[in-house]
Amino acid sequence: MSTAIVDHEVVSAAKWTEARKELLKKEKELTRQREEVSRLRRELPWEKIDKNYIFDGPRGKESLSELFGANSQLIVYHFMFGPEWSEGCPFCSFLADGIDAAEIHLKNHDVTLLAVSRAPYAKIAAFKERMGWKFKWVSSSGSDFNFDYGVSFQKPGHNGSDEHARAEERIEYNYSTMPFFSEEMPGTSVFYKNPDGEIFHTYSSYARGGEAQLIAYSYLDLTPKGRNETGARRDLTEWVKHHDKYEEPAAHTCCGGQ
Amino acid sequence: MQNAVVSRSEWLNSRKAFLAKEKELTRRKDALNKERLSLPWVKVEKEYVFEGPEGSRTLGELFGAKDQLLIYHFMFGPEWEQGCQSCSMAADTINGNLAHLNARDIALAVISRAPLPKIEAFRKRMGWSFPWLSSFANDFNSDFGVYFTPEQRGGSGYYNFGTGQHPSEEAPGISAFYRNKGTGDVFHTYSSYARGVEGLLGVYSLIDLTPNGRNEGALAYPMAWVRHHDRYQTA
View 1 (cartoon, one colour):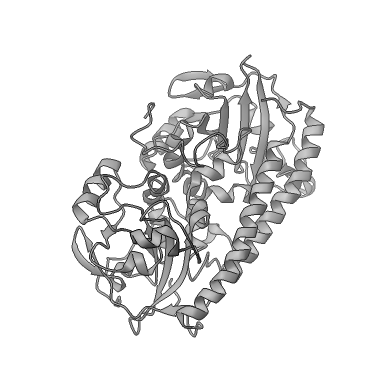
View 2 (cartoon, one colour):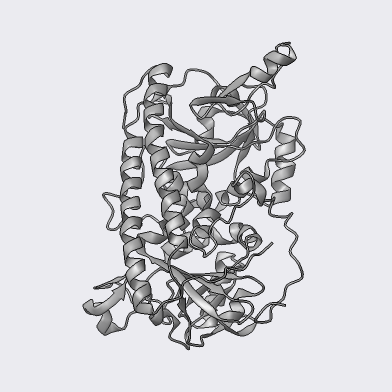
C-alpha cells in the first residue's frame, strides 16, 4: 500500500526557504480568492420556502423551522443513506467524522449543523451509534425534501420506460445533468430563518463543493505524498472506508519499520 | 439581514453563475496542491527527543510504521494553565480524522512546549486521545518557528517566513516530514503558519457557507468568539 518516494530533491535550509516563500505567495493569493468567493456567496439571492417539510428524529416529528433550534442559520448535510441501505455511505461517513468537532463551535456562532437522510430514523439511529457520532441526524423519509434539494433520484425505469430509454435517462445534479449514478448523492444546503419565522434557502453545493468540509484532505494536502489517489477514478472512493473498517496491521513502533 | 428574494429559476441562474467561480477556486487549489508536492526537502540533522505518555520518543520514532508525519504545533507555553482556544478548535477535529490519515500512510502528533503533566491533564479534560508530546527539553519549537524569546517577540521573531512582533511566545503551525525507511533519514518537507492552517479548522469551511459568514468584524480579533469546547455556555 505504501510506496516510497525516491530521488526527491534535497536542498539546504536557505534554498528550501526561498522555494517555500514563492509557494507562500501563491497560498496567500488562494486565501484571498477564497475570501472573495465567500463574499460573493453571501450576496447570492435567496428563495423563500413555502413547503412544510416534516422530519423524523430523536425528538419525533419536527418541521424544518424546528430544526433551526435557537439559531437563525441552518446547515444541512445531505448524508447518502437510502431507505433500503443497511448502512450510510462510507464517503459521507468520512465527512461526518468531522461534524461533531465543528458542531459544538458552530452552535455557539448562530449556526445549527445537522445531517438529513432518506433512510428511516431507526436505521439512522443504529448506524450513528455504531459510528460513535453525537450530532443530530434526522430522516426525511416520506417527504420531498431530498428530491427538492437535488440529492435523491428515482432509479431509471421507475416510470416503466423501456431498456433503451433507461440508458438515456439523465439526472439533474450539481446544477447540471449527468447519467444516473445512485439513488442518493451528497450535498450541503443552507437555510436562514428571519425573526418572523420565514425560512429561506440561501445556498446548496454538491460534488466537490463539499470538499472543503473534508478536514482530512486539508491535512493530506500538506504531506509529501499529497492525496496520493492513483486509481482509475482518482478520488477518495479508492481508499476511504468507514472509520471502524480500516484493517491496520500490527503496530511496529520501532524506528525504521520492519 | 435580508438578501434579494427571488423565484426558483432566478435563484438557479445566480447559483450557476457563482458555481463557475467556485470551480475556478477548486482548480486553483488543485494546481497549488500539485506545486506543493514538488517543493524540495531539507534533511533533519538534529536529534529531537520528545516526552510522551509512553516515555521519550525521537522525531523518527513518531512516524511509527508510516512514511509520513504531520506535526501540529499546538500553542501551550510552559507557564500556561491550559492550551490555546483556537488550537483546541483545530485539535477537536483530529481524533475523528486520525483513522483516515493513518490509512493514507500518515502518522500525526501534536507537539507543545508545556511540560508533559500539563499536557496530559489538559488532554484528559478535552477528551482527546491523539498523540501529544512535549518539546519542553529541546529546540524543536524554536527551530520550526513557533516559539519566540521575549526579545524576539519585540520584532525580530521569525514567523510565517518573515519577521515581526508577536503577541505571544507561542504561535500555531503545522509541519510535514518524510522518513526514508531504508536509511532512517528524516526530511522536513513543509511547514505552514498563521492563516495557512485555516483549512484544518473545519468550522470555517462551514461558516463560509452561511448567510452571515464569519461575522467577526466587530470582534477584538477574528477568532475572539471561539471557546474551549467545554467552556461554551451551551456546552
